[in-house]
Image (cartoon, rainbow, N blue to C red; front, side, top):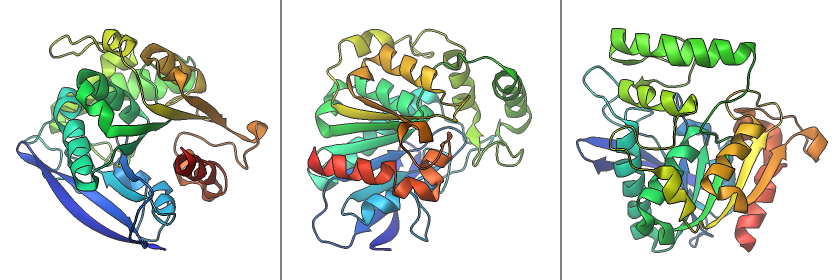
Length: 298
């Protein structure tokens, strides 16, 4: 491992966001990178203490990487509970802007922002709602990000229609939060309101804010996006199906960026899925290496 790791906490409102900072060995970094995780997970999708993961890979190659835990998740404080709730709008309007402002001030240069799964949706919403953030973002990278799950089949009926849309709201009423880790369908728990806020969008509802009606779709149409690269996985048949990823990119206008499907038929070593695109050992020699080189040249 050719980087150092430490933790910091960023105060936002009445809670603190945990930031895992992966600092390259060399004194001058290539670019600062902010990594945002998806639903029912935390920032460890990008790193571990043994030096594995995309965050560690980039830090070893000179990037100053910050992996953020959203409110209530990971090492952020307090944890999701009946006493601590947190909404999707708070993430869009408070947390993501605070993270971008903080790291831009720290590094004094625009950031590369990487998002896995649902984080790509809330990132896009935050940037179009607060266009003053856009000059602080050099590049957007997404992995398996979709807003609507349109694919059909048994997995959709079980995991989305039954577990996410029906069972999860029931669990939120019982526990006061979504105990996804305890029930073994996620790597981390979710605040109740955040879970409830995702359901209308996943079902195909309009891309407008559920709290105040802000029209994200209209704002996207007026946005001049920074350069971007978007990854989908050939074996991601539900949570980030390539057709749903493409639909999200078209809806937001992010389809002006690069788009890559990760699979053997496209020249990669593995047929990746929603999680393995960020965790499989082969990813380092596959798209991690290609991405790092592209970022250094861009």
